[in-house]
Image (cartoon, rainbow, N blue to C red; front, side):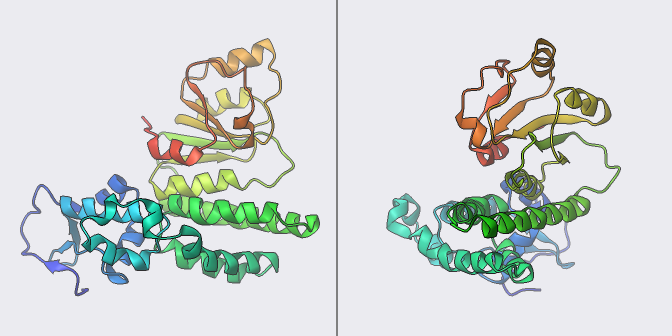
Length: 305
């Protein structure tokens, strides 16, 4: 038992308290990260039963939300605790608190160096270190997307292509392992379908979206590529699909009449993201379609039936 935990008698839990799993679903912060915030940084002090189970009160949930607010400003988790003690600190402008680039740059430099030299084990070590203390959604904004920007700026096209291919393989493996762990085979539930239009470029964004969904307990299913719209209807007959997140690097091709009918007849909400979301998409006219480059915000707001 950690010193930060407060032991309570073995009596029925107060109605206002929640186990760690419920708190994770409510806040979008996974249990591993919540435990790290408590043990390593002293940010949380949940109640404990004599059996060691954590119970979180409403004030704990509010504190988790405050921690997320600071982290979303780019503040390092090691610097959050003194800011939480200052009741006026959350009213300050983000520029008054910290420089997000300064906080994340050493980690980005280490990861970029490892990836550029093909040292995937070293890269994985860095990812695991930050993955234990930061939610995936925050890592996407401050680590993964800046990492992709760095790759795009590399002048050596062959070295860049190799790094992107290795990154895609790494993310696919990481996402696949977490899907098997968090979503046992045979479990029947509605799932968000994440896929991409055919492309010669590495599929990095879709796998980041999968990881973000798993972190937020959003059931997900993947399809490597979506070569035809008819496959969506076939998949919807085989799987309980609650939504579609489609990534595309290029403007969608002009649809034939039958394809347009298939697109408009989908019974679940659909989202188009990726580079193509910045281009006009006249064929996606039905009300269940939404074109949005900020796919992370879409996931954060997503409510699956």
